Image (cartoon, rainbow over all chains, first blue to last red; front, top):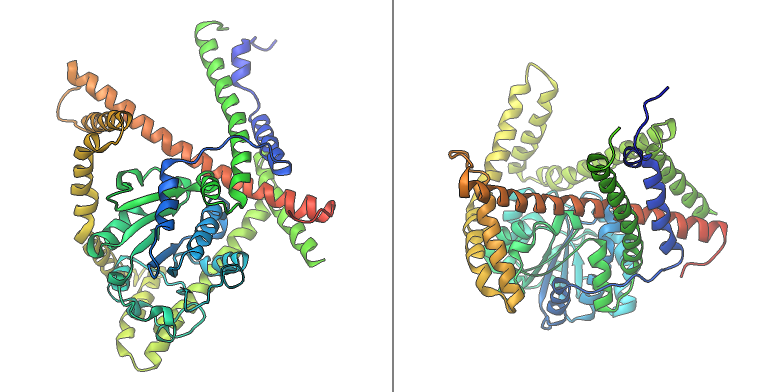
Length: 279
Length: 211
């Protein structure tokens, strides 16, 4: 005869694969047919969008694009909404690819946005892309001091001096805003030495826990931030450029309810076993 | 037809990886091996190309100084030989030295004095009463969290209570890190599901055009 176990114990030892199945189903449901779970736009996202809208004509923006394939679902909504917001403005956009598969991803991103067709922008005049270069700190210092010491050509192999957008842009002294996924590093390398203002974008796990100490919408160094697909959805809502972010939010919110239910069951089991029913 | 084959491969790979959640099996092993192999080859080719473009070509064009980074890079591979592994320490030490030196120039202002100033100012800069209260809690929480790391005094009495409250603040922040990690993984899960539903089930099986 096996040992009799209490209901609380059995509850706590539920097959974990049931949790996986439930989360999978609750995630798939809104992707198949949107549920429309409520969303609100956070203050940090509003500030991020507001600072983009307030950019003066000919503002020079440098974007560190850290999109790589495996994490793209968490960050793509932010990138797409931000590019579109920037292309709506009359600003100069330079994009620096920071990851090894970034060159492939950035091409896909711009094929989706179609800056020429949808926003009337011209490559080399309104925006340009630097090629991928591995950038340890010493190289980044060289880059901030003199862009041409690290990059001689753009992504397509055109010499930088042949691009009209690069006229008069030599170092970070000539850049106004820097979009980065690292507030601390951006502050160290761009804000303190050159006074470049930061707007932060990145994954939820890589950005959100670390950016608040640097966030101040009035004094900076980080004037606004958006992290992860959830806040990407908020940015879509705020900007009006809808993409996958809102849909992902729907799926995540519902799946979180499933996870929450199991956290609750786990706690009921633990305390029930401890205080109400032993063997 | 090509889209259907591509979507089929994507779905097969995702399902093979997910099958690991049930238990480890031949499909999950094959899928993870394929992903690791392709990533390794891709990274290797990109780095070879970048090294060629950024160092070899300038060297061939007469910029002799590029021999230094190339040599240092090659020295890294002496790790493969027990006899000559010591040579790689020159490359490593130079890399670490440059990194440390360049970081130290601004790290104090950004991560030490800047954070202390932020902590002191936090309770006073809030626009609303709620923000001010939040700043005060943050200030107290930061101070008490620091007491957790003082090991020169026994945590008893009032000081002991401070350490315990500090530990709660630390646990709350670590909990937030964990929660962010769960949400991040969930985003990737949602992305994979979306691909299965939109690219395969709706587009290929049901023939529904994308929205």
